[in-house]
Image (cartoon, rainbow, N blue to C red):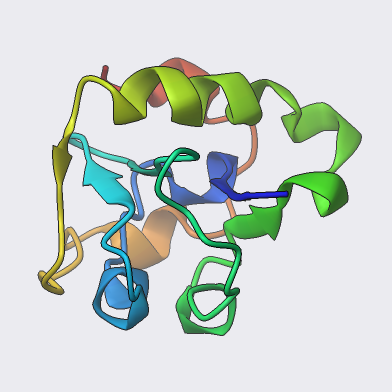
Length: 107
């Protein structure tokens, strides 16, 4: 089992999670983060650090978020690692509770 970044991260992109990752498995896109499933060691340290509640164990991912398993794997191969916390986008809090944001994901 690996961990997965789901839809709640889109446009929020808080990076609190990246600093606690012992294996640097996070990858950064323009408005979203993903977890590289090849690197994740299932430690779960990132889960409580995410202000958007966007990180799930793959087995606990809600049914309507299952596509994020493949999306994390795909984008992890394309995006660069992120290991240091950055400021969240200025409007991150405005996007925190917005649903159905997949179409806003910038690949």
